[in-house]
Image 1 (cartoon, rainbow, N blue to C red):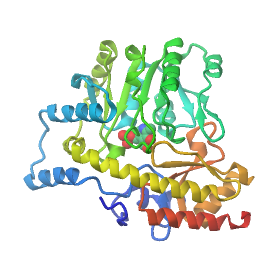
Image 2: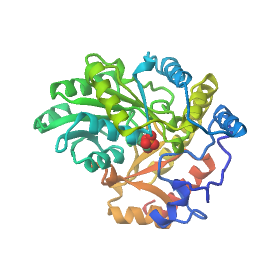
Image 3: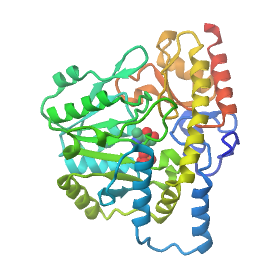
Length: 389
Ligand SMILES: Cc1ncc(COP(=O)(O)O)c(C=O)c1O
């Protein structure tokens, strides 16, 4: 578990570093990649060993008997989240963007509205629009650097054309770990407006010390309209395996999802199944505990470093490794902020507006990288705004 090791990811078909020059104009030789949400760390040895075992055997035929995989998921959810999963409720998709698209297709019709609490993970809106459904943006309230819901405003916004709401829990990009009361509020909102609730909990293991994630499945009165989405890919940095889980207990919702999966012929690849089974283990759990402590150190370094720049405020993150930083107080235009961070400092970070309404003055920084690199990024960005000091 050497999170300080600087691993060169260049020329490995790695989206984060190898596409940086094309997308941001920042060279991977001199710049720092702090955008797409994967980590610059190797997964725990258990995952590497599972792959080595496959490679050693060397025959890559169809995968059979998913029982150990499903049992590993059930073990993890019980041990880490106090959530009892019936293994027959698990569907395995090609990741959670795929799962989002499947849920939108299974439970809504073209033209229907899908509610998002924005700003939020950009692929939701992309997927909804590509499926010919309408994105209904319900803006979160930024209450002194902390996102909160405003259900009265959202109630007034509903027209009856909305059929689904997608919640990001914990929240990307604001880093909130929603409280039980807030989750109950979302569930009540979904019921009031007869919406299917999709809860994307991909970040649920990456929670900062002092905070506890509550799975939506533990909230009262929602099971009959709830679609849970989880994955091991963010937690263990195995996003290239493209594997995620949709967990549905309501029989009618389950059947619709099962029929769609069957109709499209979706079944997971063997590499992902082996990796996730190995990751969801006591060894994997110890690795995640160590990872979260390391990430928390990086979080503090980045939040304190960037918030020391006059007019810049990082949201106090409770989860994820994605720092959401507001540059509104600098009074600078979006282009000028980008120019300083991306072009001058050579730091490739996500642009706030891509996350929807409310993201206009923000940038999102991925700090899941060795601490020395986070320090380097803080130094470079501070220098790029030195005239404000
Ligand atoms: C909330 C959320 N959902 C889904 C994903 C991506 O999921 P996948 O790689 O399984 O498609 C991300 C990646 O950042 C995310 O933040």
